[in-house]
Image 1 (tube, rainbow, N blue to C red):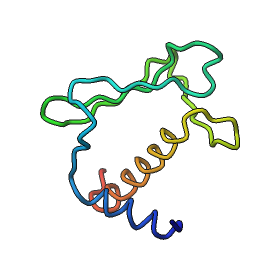
Image 2: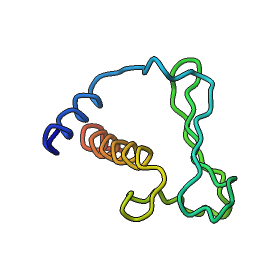
Image 3: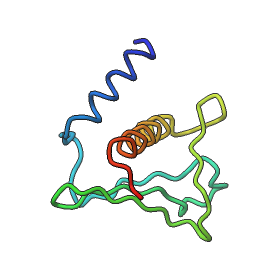
Length: 101
């Protein structure tokens, strides 16, 4: 699949509401970031409420950033990194279509 086809598919996905059959509402999906240095408590958590609203949080002290590296950089969560790219594209598109002041 080419990059152009991947981007086209991502934008098609972003423009249609959907619910993946393998996800459950009220279930926390968590992943430790790549620079945790063994501290498995530093998590990115995504959860969906019963009405399908999305909730995202981190539990890192002092607003520490979480890093999900590329596989070439030693990343252990390449799918999470790809999903975060899609999240960034969604934010960009919503900001363009519905600017917040």
